[in-house]
Structures are given as structure tokens and as C-alpha cells.
Image (cartoon, rainbow, N blue to C red; front, side, top):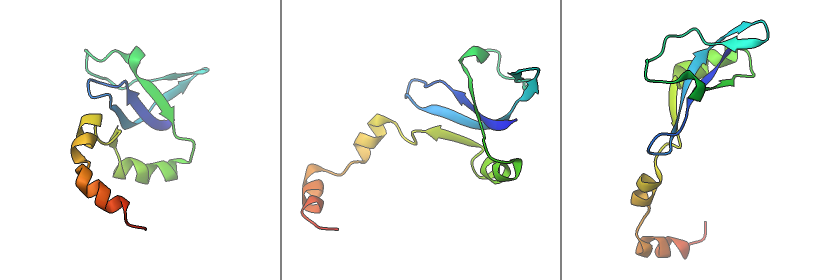
Length: 94
């Protein structure tokens, strides 16, 4: 079964998603992939891809590993424009 393995949020509160496959065994999913010894499997989640394998392959190739959100709260705050710029943009109509 194709899908994404999901790590719990770390210090930055971001989650890591990685393209992954598991094996279906008599009513349960079994992950036979070796992982680092310090990564407890019980904290990992598996998010099943509901589409076909043909749909999954290009996604896996383009986005084998994704971090979400793409940046931390602190990074977002640093990227925000100054109050002066925000005020100037706020007066414009789109």
C-alpha cells in the first residue's frame, strides 16, 4: 500500500512526510522498512494514498519528502514586512 509516513512534530513544531509503502497482512498494515534505532515506530503515522499507484508515482518523485508547515512560526514572523510596508500595501486595492 502506498502513502506517506508522518513523523510527530519536532522542536520546530513541523511534521515530516515521506513517501512510503507498507504491506497488508491479514487485517493490519505492517511496515517492514528498517529505520533508525532511536525512532520509535509507535510515534510514526501512516497516511494512505487513496489514488492509484500511477497517480502516486509522480507525487513520490516530485515530493519524496516534505516538511509541513514549510517554515516555522519564528521564520514566518521574520519574513513579514515591516508595519510601514504593511500599512502602505493595506491602502491599495487588488
